Length: 135
Image (cartoon, rainbow, N blue to C red; front, side):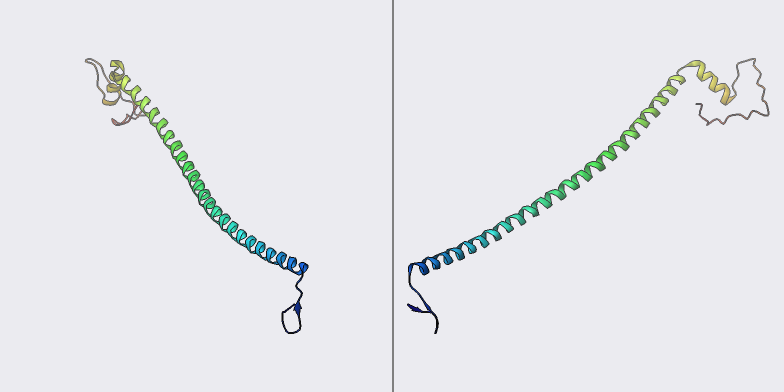
């Protein structure tokens, strides 16, 4: 028997030795388990950190994508407007190549006449300004 204090002594038999081994094994597994839990928490923490960074990157990329799509839509609208203006200007250019149309504009705006013609002005009809554009 071993003295384990002043009044308590430890019995040395198979049961106490097995019990002490079980307690030591339990302590070792508990220590190992707590280390594994700490390691797992660190790994989960690192994983969550990177997942959060990637999530932020994805959200930013989607916001940029939406902004770019808005800008593309605006530019397409401007492009279609410019195409319409271009078509109308081409139509005016083709009209200016027509001799009868040019003659009509010169007569209306600049009061040109053919030899022998007389121009009458009416007071209720205001003359067009020379810089006005015909539609």
